[in-house]
Length: 229
Image (cartoon, rainbow, N blue to C red; front, side, top):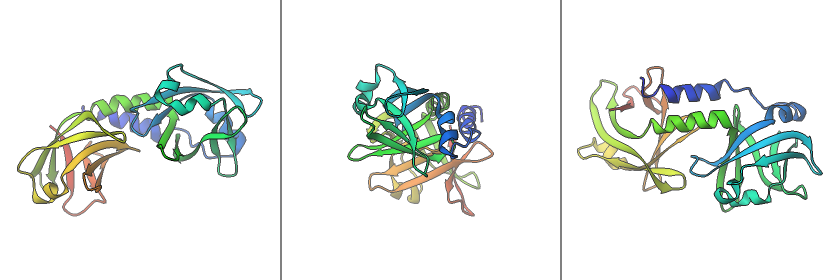
């Protein structure tokens, strides 16, 4: 429980974040402040400060100097705005063209796509840093158990990058045939879920329950649960 508590606190902080889906004027006010722009699992990050001051097109922003190295496309970003009926948060070039557009996928979490590059996440800086600390708590030995407590597999979650913002998983010998057939090789946290992925592209998703355990979803009468060792 103590090991998972930081993660649950981080997820709770996201859950109670103010819902930002509202009229454009209200959303603009809610967006003012510091935000983290990052790849889906924060292997590359950039801190933005969205300001209320009007620019030639949209509103002003500031970026940390390291942004251009971490995320090269940010060199083209000169301002920000909220546009359309769908409350799109747009990071724009000096001529007002969108460098990347974000839509809210959860309270306080925005997702944007750059063709040929992938998905990027924009979220409140404090919440993002809390989640990063929680990810560190995930590294180490885990057991997969059934609802009756029987251990069916042991595995190790590492912080070794495996590409596409995933990290390596090592499965120990003598696993249950179902888990052995799945054979996870990578993991990541995504929107509060622990995701295990096989080399064949299969994905198992686990959600933290009220007992600080991670249960495979959808749940079943004979659940599969992940526990820290």
